[in-house]
Image 1 (cartoon, rainbow, N blue to C red):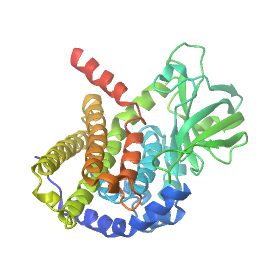
Image 2 (cartoon, rainbow, N blue to C red):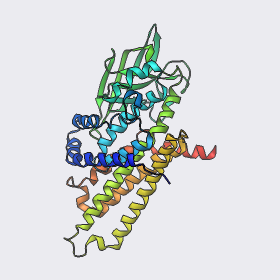
Image 3 (cartoon, rainbow, N blue to C red):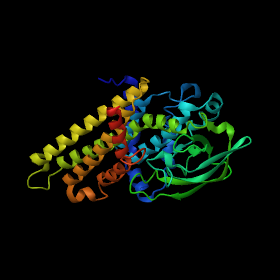
Image 4 (cartoon, rainbow, N blue to C red):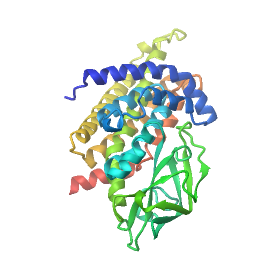
Length: 374
């Protein structure tokens, strides 16, 4: 059984107090699609943004489980604000894993307050990383990057982005390399901002690299390490998407229970309906199962026993659970469930994106089956 420490419990209570104040703000952001800079400032001031940054750089020095607990709690009230944190931590993870001492000294202190992002996907390279065609050519003390990346979460507001590009003539993923790109670098620009159905406060962006000048010191790892860097990163960040999904599902269940208890306008209150009771029980069972799977995968990461299979299972099961639970919640609420007066319809839209990003759930099933088959 996974034990939650007193320190973690205290952090959860702190985050809950902050998150409950976000409820009205998250609907405003959903309607406007504007990035919530004020919420980012709250995360900065309360040292939530820097939770995974090592203590040497005045960060929280917290592990995967603690970060998942925080994301789950925030997502109960405001999934897109939890997604903001997860996107930043996704961008930070490859740096934490592969930065050399010079790069750590340069970027870790900055990322206590600035945003990071992760950019692998391209128009022809979504689930298939081998399809990346963005090129990086060595030119003296620099690399010149040319190409277009898309669906980069918060790429339009990030200061530091891990960008993947081909550096060698090798086919497939062998020539893939990773670079630390700053938004101020010459030749870097932001293109289209996606108008998403969910997570509207933290949209994905198109990144345009046109003769983008990147110092050779900003190569992450070695040339050709890119695929390994991407996969090791995703093994450690997929449980965070799963944690947000658990939070969404729990938030939807909380709203549903509250609604059912107020069923005074019906001849027979919903809470006395056996059909509704069975649905609520099923929702609670799947949420708890997803939660335990997330906690287990996060604990394995903290224990340096990272499991691609467990991370994929957590992401797949938890995101599917969030979609199923929000759908069941809307069934119970009926017409009210699709009204903007209730958060459940927003929760469903937010949940759908989590089934797709960081590897679709079909890709997660491939990872799991390949592990099983050896």
